[in-house]
Image 1 (cartoon, rainbow, N blue to C red):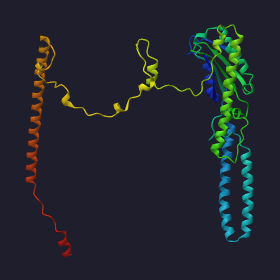
Image 2 (image 1 turned 30 degrees about the horizontal axis):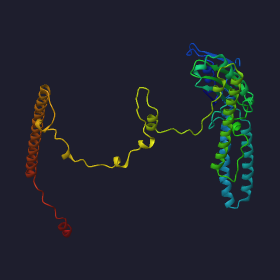
Image 3 (image 1 turned 90 degrees about the vertical axis):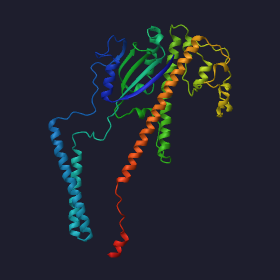
Image 4 (image 1 turned 30 degrees about the vertical axis):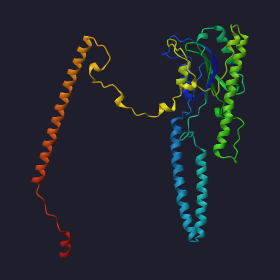
Length: 382
């Protein structure tokens, strides 16, 4: 058994879907076995886009049209201004400059009265966080009340930690209908805050470093924050196990996160760990598993040393039964039939090729040969 914390960011829509799934509130979840730890009654996961009344939509279209006309005038007058400047027409330059300044002021006023929030080109904000606090490989303790209480008490302590206590808890549920004990906890981020700002707290962009180096420093800080969450949860679980009425407490708290574990190659692993029904009398040392250089070098095979499969029976020091000899005679007859079929097919192929060659010769003889044109003579005549 071990501990694990997963962190997932959600938009308003995806958070509402996860909330239904975590609380098993849909009809597709039958015989759900969960324990609801936290539930905010009548909570609505608001969408990012705010609904605007139709009257405001109409006025917004008019505003955008006016803004478009003002921008066009500014562009046109700016081009004329350049022409008058080149002609040293001071009177026109001053009047146009004044008109452009007035149009720019009008443009700023139109921008200020915008009624609909701009959503184009922006990602939907992920306002919600889901934590999954799990005891991995704890299927034998799923229905153990003491172990359930251990997980619940550790979860309550996690809600009071530095980062998680700043979030608004929405729902929490412990699932008892899956392979391992775990708790789903959905919380909302504070306004104007992102999850990235929490896990990278303390990071400051260094202009002397490159963009890649700054990103590396930021990633290092966030990695440390995630590790703190994992280690804190594991510490709380260990402490709660020692306080509980569980048996073999010392054995249960001896779990840790393995880092950089290396595995043997499959061939060596199989050699050291044979199957139960496989009998291995003597285990060779691991160095003996490597093939020798002589085995890797290709060797020429002398066929003269091999036994001729068509040798006479008298040459071989083997006793045959009558049934064996009858089988061999049948095999000989079968081979004769196969050889005859092969000879007949090869002769048919050669005959067909001969006929095709004869046809080609006749075609070549019948074709009239056109005399070659003397191009050089034509050039001379010209």
